[in-house]
Image (spheres, helix red, strand yellow):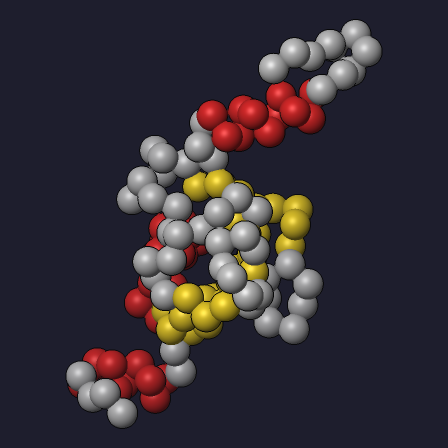
Length: 118
């Protein structure tokens, strides 16, 4: 990537190329009824977590206990056909996706603990 430090040409292109070559994925979080937090992304790298950039890895990086209470995630971004999409743990995330994690209610947790489907 040709750049010029003196005239500050193509530094943004260099930064994007570094993100691509290092296989870094930025995932932003969103709380219900609020705008996404674009200031502090979760950065998923091949060396971090389970080496994949899926919802399960993002939830585990946030907090391991969230994985036990996970119901589904709402995902906005390039990895889904329509935004928002309801996704499970195995959905692969792309750079700059936004996720909102939905936790199970106490009644749903009790049903899951007893193995009941309804």
